[in-house]
Image (cartoon, rainbow, N blue to C red; front, side, top):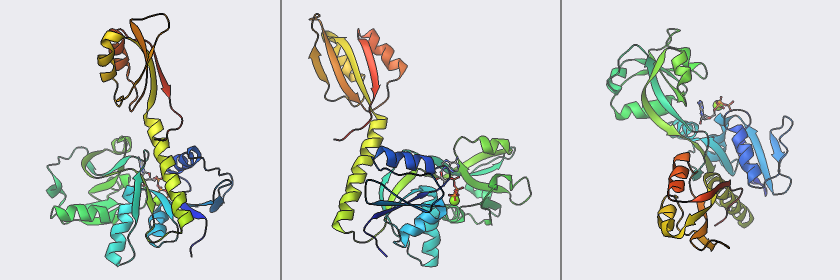
Length: 298
Ligand code: ATP
Ligand code: MG
């Protein structure tokens, strides 16, 4: 059943929830997240948010129940492979990768064991929440293994005698270390992504998705960019600009009382590290200001 309002599924609680809410807020979508509802309506746009477990988001998109969803690529790929195996609908459109939810799916083994490659996993039992991604990866290497499906506490499986190894999400590796494990092999790198259901959209909805996507683009770009202002000697100007990534077209302004120096304003695509600031200074630059950018549209 299609509705006129754009339906977006996001994680209700967990590692992606807060950043999804923050992203929508920065895109100008006004939503009151207080309370414990499954569906919340945006106040200023025809958008409804579905707040669900992340496990449900890929299926909601693949079955065409919601229009957009934000999900970790790991979960998305696991559900896709599972649905391919079952012959269920498994298609979606990836609109864009987002700038949060970064992690990797890795095989980890006892920290005291040696590891020479995937063939060491042959015949072993591996505990995981992602049996399909793991199988797709090890099938390619011709490694046969068995799984132990666990939806939580995967990292304790080897110590509990349930498995020889695990395959789980890692970001810092601290959880592995705390459980006497070490990362042996990265099998999948993941970030949060914005996905869309297959099929046609009414013109209004398609236009709204376009607008939202442009805004998301702007929000992410703004976060990754800085507005830089500085004074530089005219004679080192070229070298100064070369130090600033993404500054193809700086604005150069004369200074009122100093003919040898100019003011340079530009948007840089990277944050400025102290090292670069020091190099700028060595080239004679002064009054260097690095400012955050709130919004951006090209
Ligand atoms: P839900 O209750 O919605 O099912 P969950 O427990 O399955 O939540 P979370 O732990 O909230 O899931 O993680 C959601 C997603 O966040 C993961 O699928 C992954 O894409 C991403 N993520 C980023 N860093 C990590 C990490 N260190 N560990 C686990 N997931 C991470
Ligand atoms: Mg989940």
